Image (cartoon, rainbow, N blue to C red; front, side, top):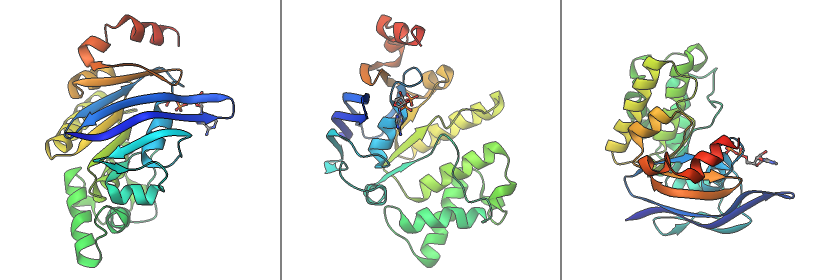
Length: 238
Ligand code: ADP
């Protein structure tokens, strides 16, 4: 069954068409990679799905519910959560406090003890439960990334958007990160991930969408895409 449907979506910045009539679907339970050279429109597309940007044309739906035209907080309640390229955590608050905020404002709007429970479960999912009362500002880079992921999970999303969540990790951390993403998919979350690390894309994503200059140039099995002459030409033209 289709969870996310992106249908003929366009976004312009002045004279630049950053996303140009892009269409593709993601099935429930799928981990899909979103590839393309720098400036091809990947983050813009993620921002359109999350509502951080509004589309100039086309329609995005999640399980049949229209997302286009809604605010980010409304889209979060429908079941979409995301991470950002530059981590957005609240450094002077504890890990629990960081994760309580999206538990309250997420899909099911938990309060009080219920929000606390959801927050704790999200910290457990990313392996940070034992540090729940530390200040977020004291965390290492990988743990800050884990915390940001926990914030997304605390909203109990159906669809998780990852924008280069694995970037900047060392090889050991990368292996842990890949395993963590896989465990989220195993728990039933559908994932769309912008990712440049091909080793991770190969390990996690059976299918990829590839963008170049705002257009979708491939939507196919990862093995096929990585040897597709159009895809290779797009990367070489970077
Ligand atoms: P990618 O994520 O694939 O690197 P982006 O979606 O960030 O690409 O950018 C696509 C294009 O849109 C680029 O040319 C970029 O400079 C431009 N762009 C992105 N955001 C804005 C913005 N807020 N205002 C103007 N141009 C933008």
